Length: 222
Length: 80
Image (cartoon, rainbow over all chains, first blue to last red; front, side, top):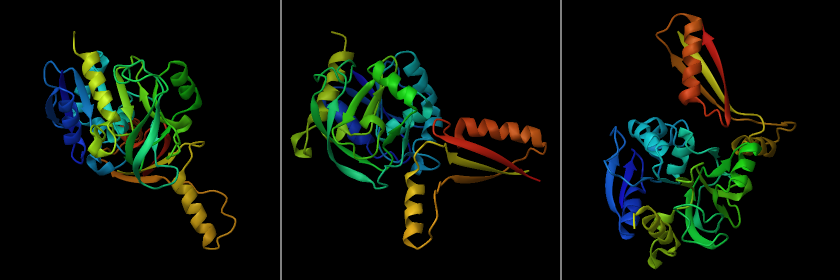
């Protein structure tokens, strides 16, 4: 599997994300935000966490209009899988590739801690390594992770089984406890928790490694 | 031509920052503040001199970047 990881000015989880893909057995190409095309033959694109463009205007807003993001949107429209984590999730909602928006945490505080999550659907190339309803632990680290969408959109996400993860105990005010959502074709995932920071026991949790191994299994032709 | 764009969270979208400001005002003894909403004010200097064209341009800017219309509404003010 060939993964591309995009770096924006202010991204700070890009190396961790590359390491997580590599640990699962993928080859990784790092891509700069000013690039206008993704490397040929890429199987998945990762949008890392961080503070792209200093979170100016709105988190992810400037990155969503960067040259590489146009190429990313075309890649996703053609069915290419995309994983956006934390700021990467914020970028995906800002492009409109995923519905909703991420507001300031309800408690106004930056929250950095491991949290328990439920795997809300196993029907995706990211989550099929778990049973639906499985409880896992991943760290969160965000100030603006309060997921919101209008009630009709939330109903549609539920009806279409597109909520990937929910918080066991919602820390940030997210509507319906949503921690991650899938695109209509289920191949774009945006999530606030950091699976790339939980790939080995010495990091406190290793549940994130399952997501990357699952991606490798589901996206690599047998 | 100078212009201002005011971006606010839409009615019905909870504004935790506005709420925190409201509580802080209450604790300073300012009674009767029933609601606070916090938004953004963006000032722009445009080369365009025709008000109608400038407004069309600003509307496009708001839709594409300045506001996230999923959660925010915007108001354009042209300054003569």
